[in-house]
Image 1 (cartoon, rainbow, N blue to C red):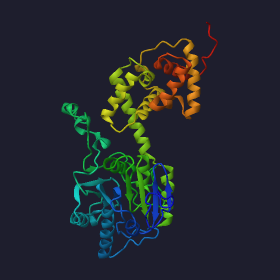
Image 2: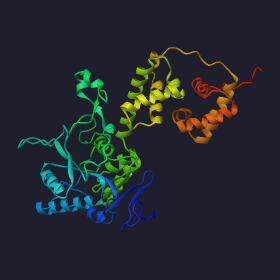
Image 3: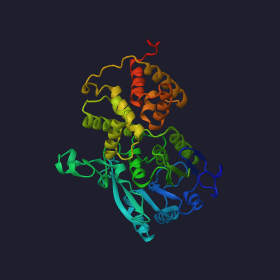
Image 4: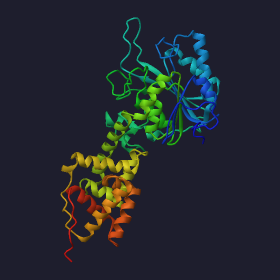
Length: 424
């Protein structure tokens, strides 16, 4: 791959901004021209939130075209997106009432298949008394091939009203107890319009899409490592969320100052996605821990004992299939630190001094230096844990892995060294 061209070695223009791990590129210019230089069928997912032609004062864009000119512009960029969309890919368009019908007809005429016509509903609309207040946008979901499209329903599950509101016992017997795929009308926490008091708000940007909205689209219609494209980058939500979800991404923005501001946001990372994900993980960790073990074992035991941890991870992934082992274990440790589970546990006898504790402490310090991780991070990640085991068992040959791990955590909890000369 050419270092100048980035994701696409044969593009006519280089990206204005770029990041690695995962690769993220921002182009500046007319999206029709940039898209014309991208390889055919190279994009896994396209999300577009174009100018609505509502005479909004954007940086360099004329937003008051004649109707015919705006539709001609719209059809051109749609066709350009269709050309670069992979056979298994999806195309999403966020659009108001004014243009939704024309876009649907055009995409169908180009052979795309409508999967859903969703509604993004928000409670805050522009006040008026000449007609009903607009409180929605259309979220059009099309695919080149309905059968081959990427679709990850387990990644976007939400609580079922039948279960949470009406306590319908039938929901407990389904493949996803108490959960369901979201409705085609989108509303709820963190799905409203981004107002000035919202933590996600970027000054100087208009029509900003919520991170939770974008997370739903990207999680459902792409896989980790896939390439996501936004032809109207705006405030940078698409690339910001794509990076948070470990997707590569390409954004195109007409205005260079707007693109530069969006890139700053992309570098800073998502605000809502990570916080919400961690909150959900901790709630899941608590529920599963109490359901399976009911205080018979400590959180430390569940993380460091291979058999206990296997059961815990499997139970969590039945509800949240995409969660990593490290994230789930760290969530359980976070709940331990919060003290919310402490009263649920039976008291455990402290580990008395033994020769293997010296080996365990030495292994702890060496593993931390070698990996550059905390002890909690080491114990929560299977790869790091294996490094600790190897070091510890060299120090104490034949000693059980569980006992060495337990000793290391015991040292952490006491906050002091247990090393002292052996009495032998």
